[in-house]
Image 1 (cartoon, helix red, strand yellow):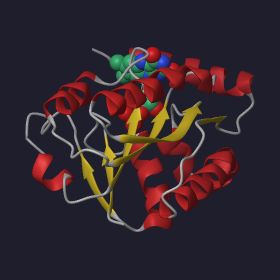
Image 2: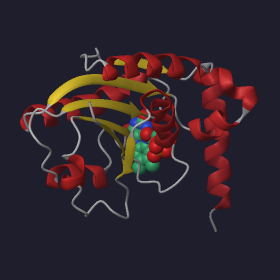
Image 3: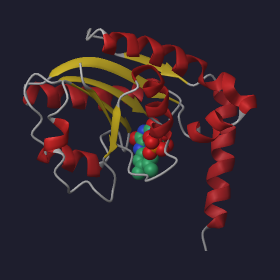
Image 4: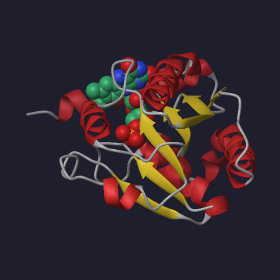
Length: 191
Ligand SMILES: Cc1cc2nc3c(=O)[nH]c(=O)nc-3n(C[C@H](O)[C@H](O)[C@H](O)COP(=O)(O)O)c2cc1C
């Protein structure tokens, strides 16, 4: 079963989605492409149609799919019956926000006659990239690691996976405190 992971973060490097793609690829060891703000007008149809399974990994933007990815999706002709899995990550700690993103991909799949096979919605991912690189903060990604390993088994067996919602393992108050400090620092850095 040939599988392709599509990273849908607009960021060219160091995105939180990239961390999730790398974790997934630890188990799947498969091909990856990124549809980002530089290349979203390219037609990836030929590449994509070499695969039986596609996994979309992207951030939630304004309760939806980032606009560059949406435009790319609208222009792609993914072959019918391709299996689709999805991982949506978001900044709010409540993972329920990601349901919108998963539902949009499910509806897209129905519309295009693709096999939507479920996925993961992950809350509290703002700063995931930094957290993952800090050895002292490894505990914050415990749930992500466990669920990505589980999802990978389903993907390898081509089984449907019930949409599952998880959050990084950081106490809510600390996540919000760090988030607020980070916003303020970023605002102060603007000229
Ligand atoms: C323009 C924009 C819109 C966003 N909208 C939401 C949102 O509606 N809900 C949410 O929880 N997070 C939202 N976020 C936060 C991102 O989903 C979050 O930071 C994510 O981890 C970014 O992933 P990436 O690094 O892979 O791009 C938004 C971020 C940006 C820049």
